[in-house]
Length: 106
Image (tube, rainbow, N blue to C red; front, side, top):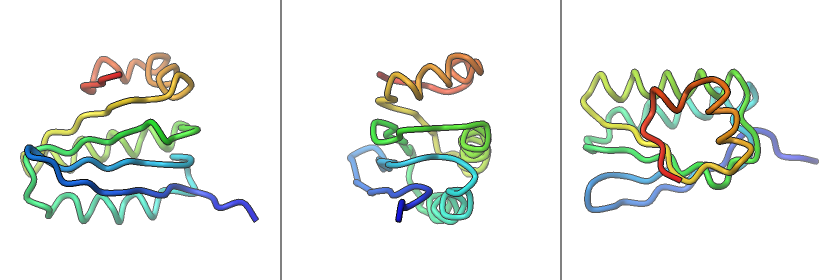
């Protein structure tokens, strides 16, 4: 059986929290991602980094989830960065001009 959705790891850093996402950020991951986001909003961190190096796929729902994360975290003054996207994920971010909205570090 193929496990759908995402898995994630949390790592505390000096200036925030890194969330390493693995798997597929799509409709199947929505509930799990929103639960994670709820925890991040109350985390009292200054910055959250989503490490996308483990994402094999992102679709329009996944992109929408990133925008929701940006809005929700921003509402409590937590900066959001996207780091290390794979080429296929980066291509989707570029095609949708998400790279103009988010701070993305390769």
